[in-house]
Amino acid sequence: MRARYLFVGWKIGLLGCMLGAAAVAFGQGHAPPDPVAQADVKFARVYALIQAHAAEPVDPNELIFEGGIRGMLASLDPFSAFFDQQQFAMLQQQARGEALGFGSILYVTPGKVLVLETAPGSPSWRAGLGPGDRIVSVNGQRLDVLGFRSLIQLLRRARSHPVRLGVIHPGHFVAQDIQLEPAEVALPTVDLDFKFRRRDIGYIHISGFESKTPLEVYNAIERLGGAQLKGLLLDLRDNHGGLVASAVRVASLFLKPGEVVLTIRGRAVKPQIERTIQAPARFTFPMVILVNGGTASAAEVLAAALEEHDRAVIAGEPTFGKGLVQSVFPLSDHTGLALVTAQYFTPSGRSIQRPLPGTALAGGNLDLGAASVFHTDDGRPLRGGGGITPDVAIPGVVLDPWMSFLGQGGYFTSFASDYLTLHERIPRSFEPDAKVLETFRQYLYRHSVRAPEPYWSADQAWLKLRIRAALLNLVYGLKAGNEAEMRGDPQVEKALNLFPKVETILRGPASPPPPHRITSAAPASARTGAHFTRRHS
Image 1 (cartoon, one colour):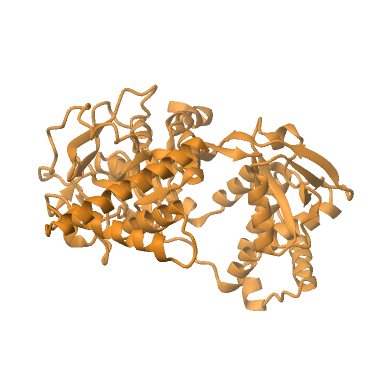
Image 2 (spheres, rainbow, N blue to C red; image 1 turned 45 degrees about the vertical axis):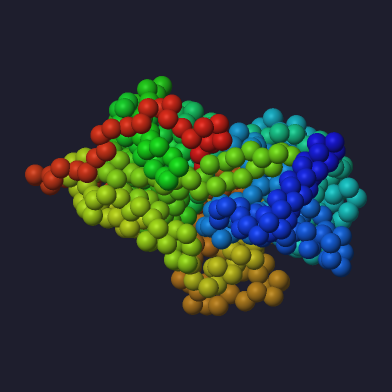
């Protein structure tokens, strides 16, 4: 409390000095000496008028943090942001790959909360919670009487405090009381890995880039067979980025040491080249990287580096196009500021950032690269303009309106919960048959959902896949259900079919033009000073 009081006093004192300086300047008939000082005077005068004449007392924190700082950042770009104490603490946890809570992944729908997975060693895991458990009360508050918004708010509040849960285990009908104490829980960024055994090809999905991601990727590859794998399908779909240094270290698992991964350039940042380092292993098996419109930032850095060094085939849909350095500056009172300070460029010199009209990142304000044509190491032409265009386009699946309705309404998970109450534990090899589909149809009918015949007939394969995944989620955990869905994903299947063609796709023209490369680098110590603490993407 003392630190907070001192900080508020410092802000008010600073504004008082500004007001005093303004009064002296105007009293002497002098204008402030520069645009920054003029803006300070305007801000100080507005602040003083609000404090003196507003109908209600104004909290300086709310006025300056929520109004002044956030408004100032909003005028720059969509990515710069101010973090209050709670948000800054969460950002630091995220960088460590941790979160305060109980270690459970929940499925939440109005009136029903189901456990899909618990992290090993977490409070939920130690208390015996597992897939399929139904939480019916929190601190004595019944959940089936709450609206969806109230339910979400209650769960969010509860995750940072000791709680008493009422839990019904699968096959039981009476709730058991469980006490939980929140703790720091490690959140893996490699959230799914398995092997297509018939092809001897590994699959890894990376959800984001944190400090522990390179080791998680290495360990996952070793679990799947290491250097003996015939190939790796690296899924970066819906990976929104994270720590760029982590993406560089992941690239080091697949590229030779010293190869360029990206270049950083900005107005107040000396040009800096990031290169691969000596990794625990360097894997040389063929690679296909699957991307989509949710692949952004550090994930795009990794995809572009492996594409431009002719190391991996990029498949899927065009990526998001976010190639900006966000430097995180710690501020007083345990708050922080994320500010866009530079741009990323691929090894060939392409800008990853797509222009954003109407912002400071409009096309005319972006450095889009020195060359108009870009090439891979072997001379394959590349398209610029922001984002990564796949080498092989594989459109994503577009569900029909009825399947979208069933998924958004949570009908598959709710059906799976009811089904398991009346049936024995299913094996991992379980496949829904016609009888299970008819049971699902009757379940929908009891919940006033009609199954239109054209959709019902056309969606049989998708219905079986979603029902199987939902059942496996509640019996064996979220990874088992996700693996079932990925094995049945048409994009994944088409990406797998590319492996026999990887060498051909990556082969350049007979006489490749000389690629545009940056050949000099600022020394590794050339940073922007103590404030440049962590680069996020």
